[in-house]
Image 1 (cartoon, each protein chain N blue to C red):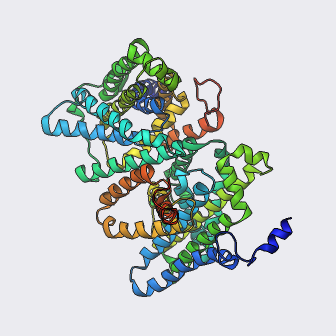
Image 2 (image 1 turned 90 degrees about the vertical axis):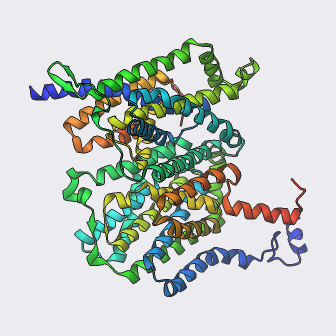
Image 3 (image 1 turned 135 degrees about the horizontal axis):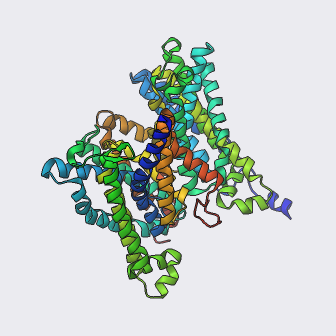
Length: 332
Length: 296
């Protein structure tokens, strides 16, 4: 029966949506390549390279939030903790082990993932409890790293100086690379069997477990990936600004921005967080740098309006417009 | 001998501060009880209270103790309006718990931004003689005057709150709504008005705590909100959510532990609230006085 059904299809490479198979397979690569190409062109047109580095890092962080919150439903307010740990591990590697910048950045990613592994027990919590306990954990990382008693190891509140390893071309390249990899990973996960697994866990962990999914393990992988992205992001950030204090990298604002950018674009979609981060971070740099409080007011209002009227962000708005065009405005 | 004196100082000072912390954290627990929402703007409301006290003292020379009474109605009205206009839409959405967290987080950002726009980014503090009291001498130790004054503010505020909750018809309705909204509504309680008012009282407690808090925390700044919210959250989960007595007991323990840490391990003392949240959540998520149930 099934075979016969297959034979009846005019063009086997077309699925129900009419998208050809190769387009579906290519779309994650396209979603990653287009932003990367735009960055590579922009650096020749726009002179403020550090701004582009920050924007690329925020695109990666927004995708990290997308992977852990969009795909599994766990909202980590303490995401900045991994960012800070990554910056510090990479900095420590450059200063004490004499690592080169790019190698130190990868080591920073490992540091972020390890910090994620330490926080694994927090997954027995859900919802608001998880969100706030990770926030406390991020602040705890900060309190430990900046502690004057540990000055011999972390240089305490006095920060790190990585000026010897500074390399503008390399740090820009790695930031753009990170953004591309983060988008690609998110898109490939979303398309894969693993992505379906995460969705099942998000919708109902008990039913997912009944269906033979190893809930704890699969959630843990998503968490590690998100933490590693933040670790690499923090490492590149620290390396690119080359002198930083603990409060610069262990900054709640990092979590706040990543979460707001991802929400604004649309959590769970692939283009959403990329566009959300690029758009809002650009606005931040027009409005925010001289008067950050006005930007803060704007995004505070954006958050409230989003939650009340468009919880699926820009991507959700676009989808509902498209649906209306397809099925007519009257259908509700 | 000196070690013992310091110990005594930490324990008694911690008791005084603990009473203040109980008032400071109670508002968060009240908002949770009213609507099952963790109010991420709690710390920012405390900051707002601090600014109100500063403005009232600097412009009109009104004592922060009197400011407590002045700010209370405004704060309750603000809370009532927030509950009335924002939460009904929220509760109909797909994932009210996480979305409410994000919504109140947005609110906290708005308050923080407005505070920066109006008062600037720098810390504001009041001179200690704004409340002209002498320090308290007890068993050869002297404690800052503001410590016992804040405890003396906290005791009547908490007393009135507990009286309202356990000894008045309004409190009876609140407790009915807290245990079951539908059953309370069937019995003729106007559930949305009752939880709105109770929500407002939660805001009121936060702002009132701020008017005294400007002395306890050594000043207010717009960005202080997040750390204050975590501290309050640490206290209420440690005491167990939804239980006012738990908050009081937890706050006193928290006050004493923080003071002990400040005396013996000063550089690690700001880790106390964070460690408290993490350990409570991992070891006893139902809190000190909570019955065994799945809260997480």
